Image (cartoon, rainbow, N blue to C red):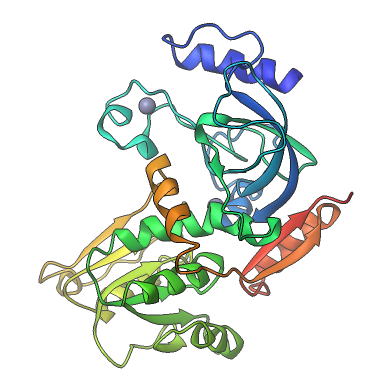
Length: 329
Ligand SMILES: [Zn+2]
Ligand SMILES: [Zn+2]
């Protein structure tokens, strides 16, 4: 329970209105059943994101069972299956928290980055930021919903009413977004690494209207595009692919520099924006929607002891759908 005590100290630092908890009244101890591997984990382990907790247990797409809980935990009981997302804690007091934008909280803590995460047999989470997992999902298939699904959903929402939506980088998030987009009556145009015919075939199998190399233009102008690939050089290409008034949504937490481009790529009310983190409301909406689509996740499971192998394969673009770590025993 040492982790609980440490977390409680952090809460005291961040939120003066929280009564001084001695044993983490809002915390649940979870036996991890599955933790998906996100591209952000690569950015964290590569040191590309500032000020991580060190040493750190990565992983922010956690499915686990409640095995102990603080006295303030009322949403879950022992044995319940819950999901832990990237957003691990917010202050509730800053201008962002008070205006429905807790994803931008000045003092937010993030699972697997500034809080220990789910590449583990057990983890501790604040129950207020956990979600119930729909019963229809097995543990491993549910895990990617917690970031790939949630960030994908928020990114898709940022495209507004766009009907033709391009997706650059067809990994875990894209394979979920494609299913949601089709359910909403949209068309998906999938862009992959040059010559990645397997990835393009995967996109088409999920119902994408078109799939091709990321340096080519789609057969029709797009209404919006979502960038999941962390490659800044694709942003000017995506702007070229979108029609007047179109938006390019950058869905990743890290991206290489965006090269200079002529203003006429942006002209005619095209825009570029980013998506940062998630709100609990995104999660409630998405977990209500996912079983209705129904979103099916394609996963490649690895024993927890092979976490580095999973990361290596993700880096090399060798994962179809999402990689998921499963603790032994
Ligand atoms: Zn805040
Ligand atoms: Zn993630």
